[in-house]
Amino acid sequence: MKGLDYTALVIVIIGAINWGLIGLFKFDLVAFLFGNLSWLSRIIYALVGICGLYLCTFFGRIENERQC
Image 1 (cartoon, helix red, strand yellow):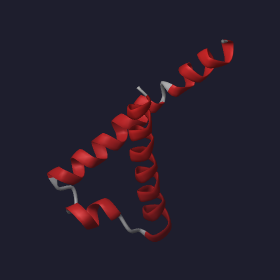
Image 2 (tube, rainbow, N blue to C red; image 1 turned 45 degrees about the vertical axis):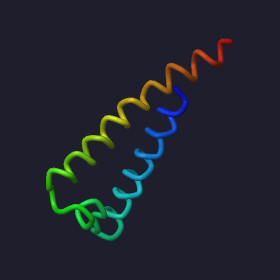
Image 3 (spheres, rainbow, N blue to C red; image 1 turned 120 degrees about the horizontal axis):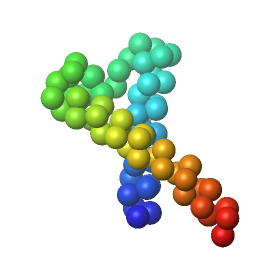
Image 4 (cartoon, helix red, strand yellow; image 1 turned 135 degrees about the horizontal axis):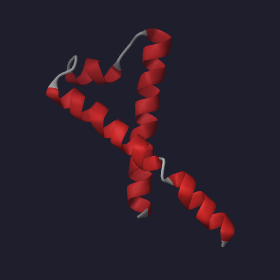
């Protein structure tokens, strides 16, 4: 489970860096590397979103660890 957690965390961090580049410099790294809304870039965006939703489960797991 920890491997999945770390993988999801890395993907979300990469996505956050991409959003920072968009906000600060109007530069979309994913679109630059894989094409503007190509099927591959859409998969990457979807993967970042799914990992972000998965990481929402951290809140419940942190609370469970505190109680132990």
